[in-house]
Amino acid sequence: MLKKSEPIALEYLMELELWTCAWYDEAVAANHVRPPYHPDARVIERIRRYFHAGLSPAEAADACFGMTH
Image 1 (cartoon, rainbow, N blue to C red):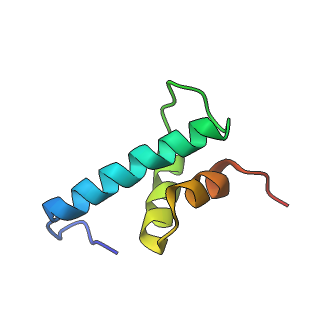
Image 2: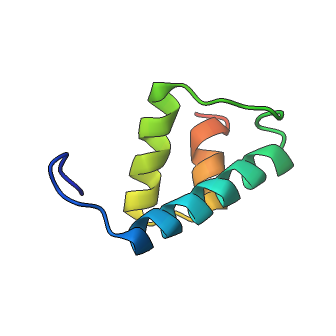
């Protein structure tokens, strides 16, 4: 996990942007959210952790918005 003082590689930013766009598309396709959707800080932190954990965008959308038991 990155620390606030660590530089971020361009490749990492591009991968994160592509993953986040795919996460958004998956969330819309699964009817979890409707466009335009603007996540709050809590959701942003959650999806950042899902990205770092290696979840796919579809898995992250379901984990973020799906039903909990």
